Image 1 (tube, rainbow, N blue to C red):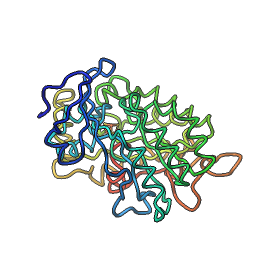
Image 2 (cartoon, helix red, strand yellow):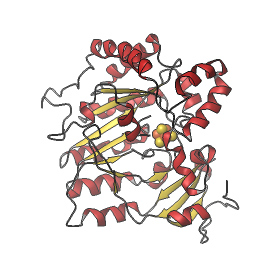
Image 3 (cartoon, helix red, strand yellow):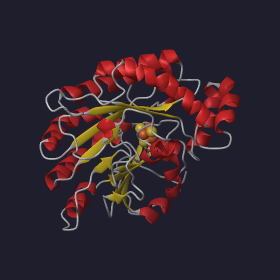
Image 4 (cartoon, protein in one colour):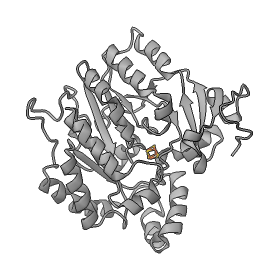
Amino acid sequence: MRWSGQELGVERDDALPGLARLNNLVRSVQTPEFAGLTFHEVLAKSALNHVPGASKALPFGWTINPYRGCSHQCVFCFARQTHTYLDLDAGRDFDTQIVVKVNLVEVLERELARPGWQRPNVALGTNTDPYQRAEGRYRLMPGIIAALAASGTPLSILTKGTLLRRDIPLLQAAAERVPVETAMSIAVYDDELQRSIEPGAPSTAARLATVKAVREAGLPCAVFLMPVLPYLTDSRAHLERAIGTIADAGATSVAYSALHLRPGAKEWFAAWLARTHPELVPRYRALYGSGAYAPKGYRRQLAARIRPLLRAHGLDRPRLDPTTGTPGAHPRPGTAGMGALASELSPAAAAALQPTLF
Ligand code: SF4
């Protein structure tokens, strides 16, 4: 960890090594309201990122990532490795050293005004969570939503953050102009396990309540039951509880995928498993010893367990809005957006969508 000499709210003009390579550091901030977190405010040069190789499975070609690092601190988070590009580590630094692109809205407005902008769907939450705790302080999302809607650009938001509720009125207004989709990632329906493996994220109950609130506001909201954790959350009883409560919350659809463990996340997850569930270490070694993805056989068994539950709860296909006959009040014409996901995501698609979905 190469950050040192941080002071409360004091501006720094000496860019630190990793961030100097990436972007312009304005200052590093710690405040009592966000104890344990350091926000590194940077000036972004661009806001819209092109996703190479977007496919039908991933109905977006562009993303916006207001933050790097994530205070939700999910042990299995795939984005961990990206923190090492900043000379920060993929473990505790990823959880607590949050890079904030403070000028993002201004840069975005400029980019959206370019004559060549074709208004493809833009996804938020495909790298780190846009409604993580920092958003309570920096409030970047309202400006982003408003700028996208004003430019006629459809948007999708994927999150674990209950702060999404704050922006429901804005999303409703945006949905009057452009297609808007939301998805909440909720993987663990056991409170003790959830607190252990996603220690900085809102509780499962709070996320389900957010899904309900979004649906009551007339917006589509999918639930990503991801990652399913082998031998921890893949029992019939856990999956029944999960899918039953997702259905009760009124989710538009459900997508699921078994855990993937890429470098960065793999080491952090292995240490957590050895600490909390040492008896499972050999079984995980058998599944993930030679790769990042759960083996096909495991995924087949998982599908056989989940599909009947989705069918039983009417979640094997997107729920339709009775007034429009579509998955949401404002679906995106001609595309299979998040409202249409009601099945297992292939490992490649799930990995590419990573990591806020998980
Ligand atoms: S999985 Fe998503 S919510 Fe969890 S730490 Fe990573 S980016 Fe944040």
